[in-house]
Length: 111
Length: 226
Image 1 (cartoon, rainbow over the protein chains, first blue to last red):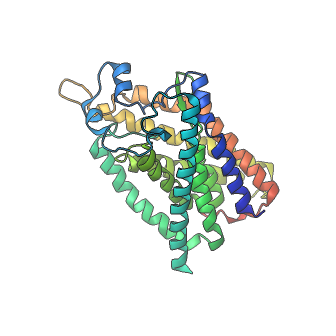
Image 2: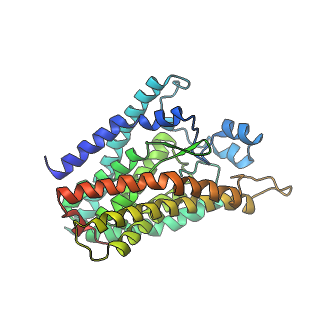
Image 3: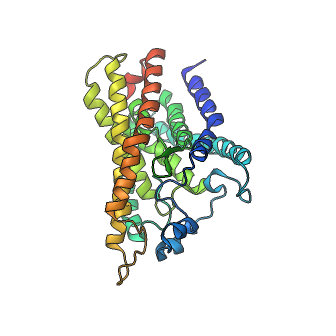
């Protein structure tokens, strides 16, 4: 196997293991990362939500919010893990594609 | 460390966007000059690696979570400028596709994780590894130290960005308009979790991969031009 193929295989393994990133926090009852709370969570924590956050938090509707499928909120860990792996596959495909494109464009210019 | 929309004022976001544009231009210029054809696939691998490693949320004391970034590793292997581009791609897709990090905060998030993190890590690594042989243990330790410094410094920057908001932007009665947490709360919250837990995850990830690559072929460590 070439060096690049070996590294891709490693990323493939990480992709499959990625739901550990859901399960481990779940096991330790750890919530959202600090400072990344949505409006509801902020309301619960502080009793109020700053006006700017209220206004801007919904600015962008991501197609796979928090690496999950829309409408699957409240589903069990098995479902969310599945969505997580799908998100990983999709994310990696797009990111690798974009990075490859940028790399090729930049290198081409000096070849 | 992905600052969402609304936590930073539009002006703050504008400043970071304005800071990032020349950095992105410099990065493309630099990468254009130094990146070799054979390294292009590794730019994609670096971006993909960083993205997937950020999905591994780890609990930190106090009930929240954090994650490694993997950006220092990319900087050691491809140089900090290429790492800046790889991480920017990952961060932009995270914001657009997954809502991880705000779209208005892309500039700030890129500043923290695509600039401060790889550059701090890279120079700490260079300082400690100096002229040690490519296969030496000292390189592994230097990589670990760089990883720790890079991610903790990025967390400090994020903490300062959050923490300045209530000072700068509040109503006449003192009510915060954006991030409601001042420096006294935001900086320790961001920094402690990274010093105690996440920094070590980044160390582990970086050192393990460096160790593996050293064994496989040390050619990698001759290519990391600045």
